[in-house]
Image (spheres, helix red, strand yellow):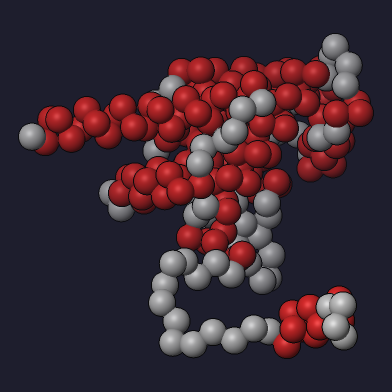
Length: 204
């Protein structure tokens, strides 16, 4: 019985990670209602101690963590993608799908090579200003060129996945103010919404 459950879990995880990998081709990213299962599995891994990367090398994982922190940083009001475990979420999915793993392995290799070409250092070893310079180039499709296109595609994909991982995590949902499907004793329409509706009403 437990063996069948393990097989089903592996099949589900493979389908989830495959749907994420399709995002690189412009398809929809992992459905939000299903990401909770991945977050739960990652949390179970963390209950045993610090998360250990399963698909990415230590260097790739550290680079992904830094990218996640730059994409959605923490501030005095809220925690960011690093605290939300975005890199753990992505690595966990990479372990279930080699196509997804290849996206990150290849993308981080391109990023390191581009940094070495410009500054003789990999991304993590470069100065923050140098990192920002290259990320600013690959953050915009208007900078498309044969040299930058692989980086632009990778960074676009990574931003989407980091955002998905963050905003479907407990930390991200708290940041959004999402309360979940819970019962409330009463509901009142905010006064601002009523004023707006009345102002636009033809009977006002």
